[in-house]
Amino acid sequence: MTDSNEMTINLVVLGRTQTGKSAVGNSLLGSADFESHLSPSSVTTRCSLGHSSRILGIIRRNGCELALRVRVLDTPSYPHSALSKEQVRDTVRSALAHHFGEEGLHLALLVLRADLPLCPDESDHVIQFIQELLGPTWKNYTAVLLTHADKAEEAGFSEEAYLHSASSTLLSLLSSVQHKYIFLDNQKSIIKEERAIVLRKLLNFIRQNNYQVLLLKHSKE
Ligand SMILES: Nc1nc2c(ncn2[C@@H]2O[C@H](COP(=O)(O)OP(=O)(O)OP(=O)(O)O)[C@@H](O)[C@H]2O)c(=O)[nH]1
Image (cartoon, rainbow, N blue to C red; front, top):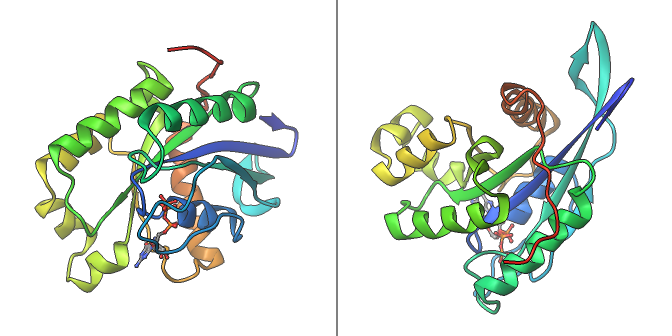
């Protein structure tokens, strides 16, 4: 949604349990709206929408500053320690339609851990899940967020070295989403400048997509 001096971007975080989805949401919003902590069972069990305040210094149009507003839908993981695939899919689908049904979705953020290898079965399952939610054009509307970048860095991997050693499954996924990926360290509370860098990268992805949105409707499987 864009009015004369404001732009809103609609995002959803998706992925396996304990990858840092809620932490990503909090980092992007600059808040602690979403419950995020280490747990031996999945923490998030329902969808919830968080809103940022007006963010300045990120985007300009025709030489004028626009205020950016970010909306993030946090979701239960798939796979989940207590919910079936159908339960997660139906709850996410209806939350997407409820919150973004009118304005559309700019980007789904598939959250993966940079400190764990992505294996073929896991990738297939998550891609199938995203496809079921977003439909055949999912690749245009999906970016990969690699959390735990701090751990990869501690182990001596720069981004370049990481991608050089990454599994072919991850590389093929990144290629299928047209290399829309971002490394993130959610561990330290993200500072304003770092958040601005991440938001600019996300806006670039959205710009590459000509600001198109994915329209989501209620539908039965
Ligand atoms: N070191 C490190 N820890 C992280 C990072 N991102 C998240 N975590 C930690 O990972 C744990 C899980 O984070 P959550 O945000 O709850 O993850 P989630 O995917 O929402 O979890 P569920 O709701 O249980 O599926 C927390 O202890 C976070 O502090 C990161 O980039 N680096």
